[in-house]
Image (tube, rainbow, N blue to C red; front, side, top):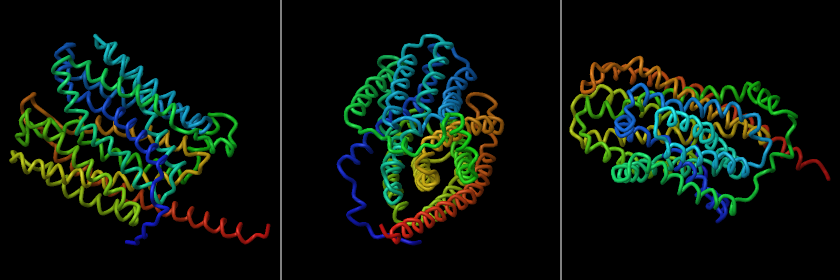
Length: 426
């Protein structure tokens, strides 16, 4: 692995730290809004008399509407100040989450989840575009690592707190808590974040549809989209049945399950910054490949386990988080280097859409593989999911290898043009 020596240029300014914190907090609220549905499932189904299929659809509806939203807005993503775009979609997310907290029937809940997905599903791609605009590739791994900490923080803080207040004030209260926090974040973004509009001066596409087609038509970008899709397929395939497998197959109790979530979240918070630093210090592709092999080994062992002592289940989950986070950070950082400044918003929007759609597809495919005879019986064919994920991981390594070659070629070409420009006499 090649390394680079940190310099003063690698340090973050106070404004850059503020941007990272604000974007991480937006990620925290959006991720928590999506993730909290599963822990609240039992309360929701009992209070609204929902069937398991109705509850499942209310969860997947968010993912599919988020994916559709990203595709519809991709053409507009580079035609506005990114700060204004973030504020617009974030206020829509706040309104949708408020509707979730006020829903009293299945149709209103379903409509609220679809509405929230239409706005919330775009926020991640806007954040990634902002990061790509403001931070050079040498810093981007660390920034991505800190932003992805929102995922871990939602498990460590968000889900336990949400379950606690839901037990006191009802299942609606976590959504209202998210609304209150998000309003504060929205106001700080409005007052403190500077305009991010340098990309507007280099736009060449006259129409939003033309810009969308221009982005999709580029072969280099399509390789990046494909890499993201396969990464998401493998990442989401086991997630919906993680709790059921832990309880029915491994012997984890319902009281131990929140502890398992919290412990995994703490590991995420620790691993994310480390993965970000390693991603900036070493070759991103090699780090991704090593993490993919590690994750494949852990997946094969875990999906074939039976009743297991809780401490060993915790250890295996630490192994999971090491593999997942060490893959995610370098993959996102590497893919973000593909688009030019004029295409970053559209690229990130399409990328995020494919991630959401691939996640929904992975859940659907996983549902056809996994079988459970009744609510209390062990899951069957869960090990088959593990083997499928290993195959998908191998394909992901190959696709990210292609992305790495393209990024290195672009970097070399950019350096060559810069040198030639410096040699031209003024």
